[in-house]
Image (tube, rainbow, N blue to C red):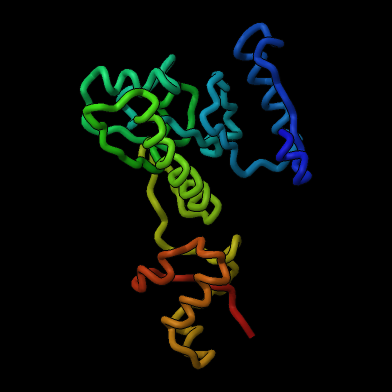
Length: 219
């Protein structure tokens, strides 16, 4: 909260203990969210159950410190997940970023990252290894969402491989080879420039030359 205030980001606290049931608690959260034009709700490991209204379906993202559908669900959180993984004898664990729905750890999976489970692991050592991957996976999922590259198809999240460099694709659009030719520059060099100008947000600009890139018309 202090960090948010420092950067001028509005904050609100909705204490679970102030409400008699999940419905009342969820309605209070939704009332706070409704004050803003919401694109994405990031639960970031939020432990209490939030009943998601229909208008926010597909806009709520969460992360779980395990590989869903294993070691997940009600009461599987934090240290409990890592204890269960070790006690079961699992050889790999990891984290899962997913769209949340109104069932614990049930929504469509966006990203999973894995780590080995070592013979001498403790819940704390395994948690640290998984947390390192969480710090990579969650920002990646948010970047993909912000770029409009995630499409939910039932239980499957598909990635749209057409990169939108701008937030809104304007019509008509030109594809990168045509732009490079018009500007008289090499397409590879133009991809590198766009990669730098977008803050490295789209590494596929330089690693996947087969991808189509749409830009608004220029000139």
